[in-house]
Image (cartoon, rainbow, N blue to C red; front, side, top):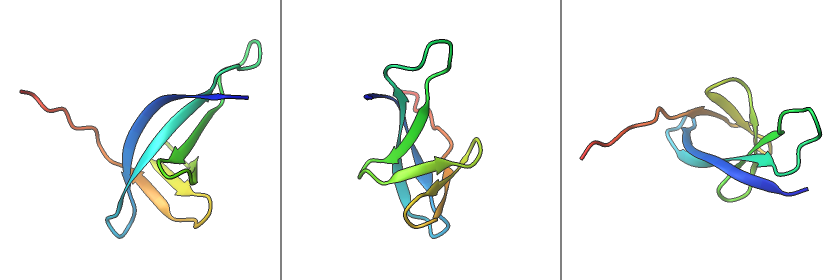
Length: 74
């Protein structure tokens, strides 16, 4: 089953490090069901979603907080 990249955002850990997180949907969801969403770091590490703005790295258990989106007006 293939996954399609549908979003990307940055998240920060408690020590201030910033991670690039990619959001994927299954390309072929089951009939009548919503697509399954998965998250991974840009380097491939798996990420679990805890709530709307909190995520956890599967391998290390480090908690990440989604950075607010910033809009640049030119």
